[in-house]
Image 1: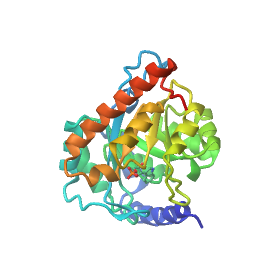
Image 2: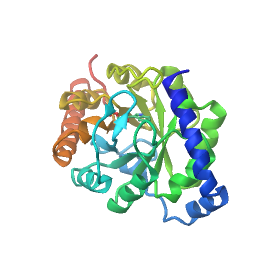
Image 3: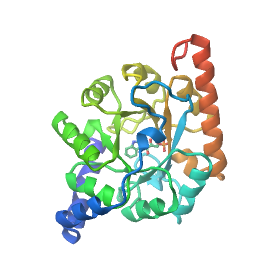
Image 4: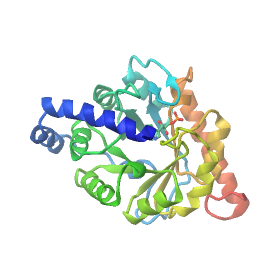
Length: 286
Ligand SMILES: O=P(O)(O)OC[C@@H](O)[C@@H](O)c1c[nH]c2ccccc12
């Protein structure tokens, strides 16, 4: 069994427990009466036809207590105040892990962050049942994560449609050329390349540059995972990331606000200079 499969087994068990206390009818009702979702695609710099982008590299800042690969990262007693610091530093989206067993997150964290910030919020979890999409919306999420490696084509299409019906966007996460092809084919507007392999947990940040050109330029392209220092965000920016998802480096930083600000500026500058060096949109010479 891969790590991903064993995480999903736990997610399903926890989900059945929640379903026993809040029925599907009830959670649907809460989803449909929640205040409307914010436009995460626009917040990440997306435009309808890919034209007129401003060239800024956005930072998706994550509230992450622990992970299966790294163990405990940070206590985060107040996710709301961390999220507020991220927002003040210029984050474009806040990602909140809601998976409990391996990542120490919860829907209560999502509620707290939603209350605290006015930018879009991503519910970061392992989405395997329609119930979770209603739940995400009911708890104020604007964006959900869809992990291509965890879904067959039919589920991917079904879940993307449900996400859009609920007024949300999806960050569709890939790790291989084949997964990118599937994400593109289903019409994903926001596509992430996770440089961490969720089956083995190995990180190789070069994966982003190798795969990025397979994603059409009218999609919002997100580099995910593996940022340790500012040179990593510069590399992702130079390789043409529209946005970068950062967890560990921000939760461990003594000054999350300044770190987000510095990452955004450095990635944007690196992207601009790579672009002017080659004359080709967002590509480096390698
Ligand atoms: O802490 P990092 O290396 O900056 O990674 C953040 C984020 O990309 C990572 O948390 C992540 C990416 N995809 C996921 C899927 C599920 C859980 C977590 C993730």
